[in-house]
Length: 228
Image (cartoon, rainbow, N blue to C red; front, side, top):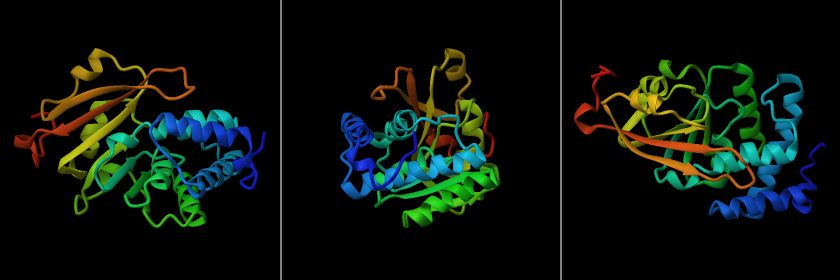
């Protein structure tokens, strides 16, 4: 099934998106729904050539990508957000569409993926999105963020190690996970304060999803020794 942006608002997929968002406490405007539709159209089109995602079915894209991304929304209170390993712009692009007053920086080391993100940014006139083609560890800390988010990292400890220099002192790191073991939580360095494990329900996604929320301990802030 192929998506058309001019028809998405009137079919069942539009209702699926709107209802799923409302279940997550998000009320999208008609313009925002159209932008999500255009994003999905572009994702399908580019996916044929660049294999950006293994999810091909439009319904599954809405559930597994859009609604899954929106599960982060209520934990983002700050104004500047870094999406690490953004891939096809997830979760950063849906969140940027839903939050035009917040600034999102999306970083990925893959040139084809950042070209896609930049295409969507330009096509949707998303002035609140910055795209960076780089590895996150190569970014300097001249710009720091209220939140650092990712659903790409397999290891939480590795995610913390590579991004701690980019987080504001009172900022939070939000790691999206499926199942998470006690061992993985135990590997979180003592320099980090484990705030909460949020078990989230994604509408119509029958898989366990977890968001780990962490902050750097104030007495450790600015330390170059990750394991101290």
